[in-house]
Image 1 (spheres, rainbow, N blue to C red):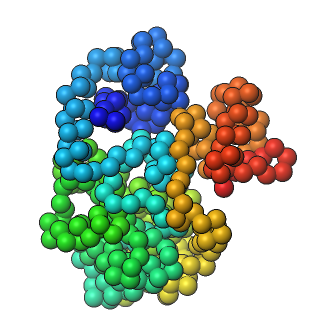
Image 2: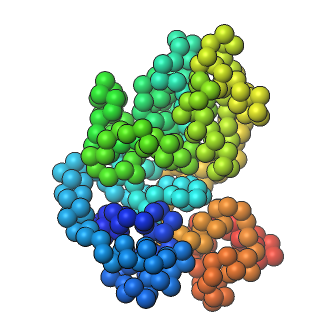
Image 3: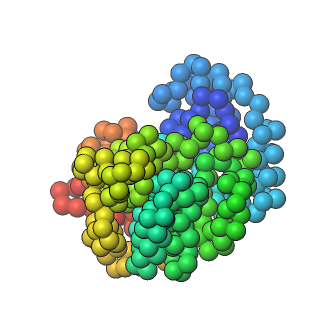
Length: 361
């Protein structure tokens, strides 16, 4: 029942990911947010009368109890954004999920590259995907994809077969097997890689879930590689999220006579880095790889955060900031910000630059 109130608050209509985090910054825990008075809730930034009424009137107990039971029965871990195991790179995106349902291991994620592409990939596309995923795994780069047919499955399989780490991000509940023919791959990913979902247990793979899933794929990755994609494919949605999140975008050039090549080729024309071999990806990842090797962070546990520490960390993840800008953007006092910055430094989460400027480590 550890995450009972997390499930409860997330189930409240009108409480999205951003509102959830603002409530925690104000009240510290979901339980305190749910028990806050209407007047206290109204003081939170972005909370209007409709949200207050929704929080105070929502009957959450049955859903939260049922979700706790399902999680325990399925042997699923729930990792909230304050915990060590939560991928801190996700805090850099505009609306990270408050928690993730996880099967497998979250350690050793950095650096990661997402590989996405067509569900109906050509032989060329599947061979290229497998080759690049194997080589990335051989260089200790995590391969991320969406567990779909075609390119996604080839990316996961290539990484696992070379002894690497791979993460599958689902567009359904983590207890839902989709596509059904990937049962063996699901089992291997849970045992030797990891599966992530932000959707409640039992959520079906509905079409509207996949764009949301795609922002997580790009969000936990340093870059997104598109192997084959039509002009209106979900892979291009993932690439667009990557651009908005400040990630690198790569593309494998394809046969100009195939419609499945048009999306990737268009990305290259628009400035995506053309990939002919794994070296084209690795040279962009060099700073991150040097950091993880030097610091040993690929195997060390992460760091836990308080809600206010997470808010400051998120500000600095966007860009380095002077302490005065941190104070202004956070709305906290000078003393509060100074104390939080010191704690984050001691945790190794951020570093102080010259002139009272701060950046994430």
